[in-house]
Image (tube, rainbow, N blue to C red; front, side, top):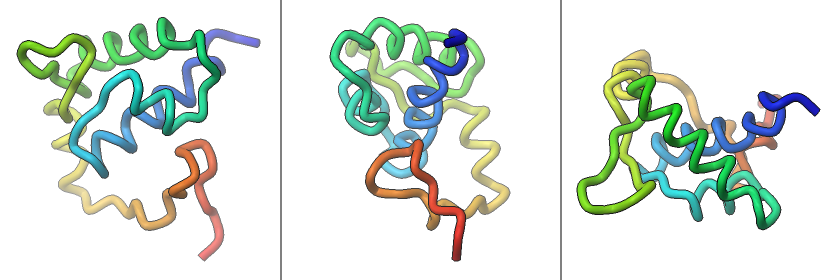
Length: 97
C-alpha cells in the first residue's frame, strides 16, 4: 500500500475536525479516522505537514494540537457544504442526497 493511501484518512479527518470542531489533535484524528493503535506517528507526520502547508496552525504550549490555518480559513469562504460528512468517520462520506 502506498504511503499516500495510509495517510489519506488522517488528512481528511484532520480537515473535517478543523472545520467542524475548530481544533485538531492526534487523539481526535485517530478516533475520527478509525485508525488502529500504532498509527500515531503517521498522524503526527500528517499534522506537521499540514502545518508546513498553512492548513493548520499550532496551539501555543500544546504539542500536536492545532486550529485551522489560513489556507483552510480561506477555503471556507466558499461556503462548502459539509452536511454530507458522516458522523461515523471522515472516510465514509455520504454521496447520496
